[in-house]
Image 1 (spheres, helix red, strand yellow):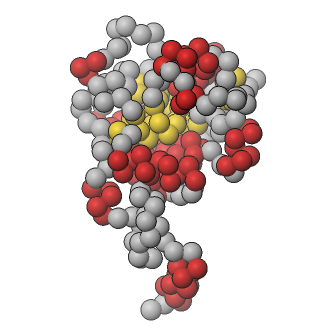
Image 2 (tube, helix red, strand yellow; image 1 turned 180 degrees about the vertical axis):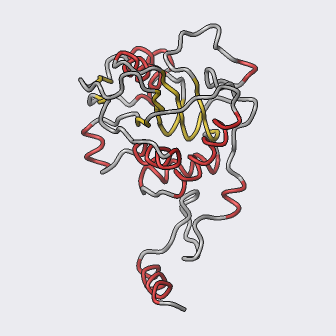
Image 3 (cartoon, helix red, strand yellow; image 1 turned 30 degrees about the vertical axis):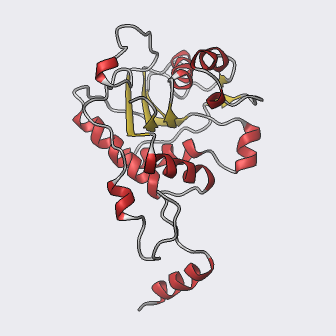
Length: 233
């Protein structure tokens, strides 16, 4: 046993190692439960990369989306839901790394080819960020930016403080409310660039579409959506 292993064992006595997918205590030598990893509900060919819906309910011809493509690594259920909830309270780079790996696989297998210039996370309101200490979308966006070897641009969008959380609203209320939540900065660093907009969960897609509109207004050439999970199934 080397010094590094000994330090890990001692540290594990006071701060037990936990699986970032289920939150349960695991051996200090492993990164996550094999069973949890196997049970991640991965998306497949049934997901339309144009709108983010499953192919049988594709809305590409019905909706006017501001984003060009949409990639969701997993479905928001079971182990994936647990992993995202855990990420919101305990920042880690393991689950985001798994998400980034799956997103890259989906991009590589997609018939549409592009080269992204940077990754932008969906912002969190300043008040909530101060309370939590971090934005989980930032953590996911950084993992994806590192995997693609492109810059992370974390401060180009802002979210206003709100008394009502988006997830507490109906689909129609989300669409109305989101128009007043986000704002763009005066930066011109994104002009002409292909941007990946990253978030943890896609529900109705209202937030992602509104943020995409703002990025387009800032002069981006195209916006690509990448989320850890989607509720659409």
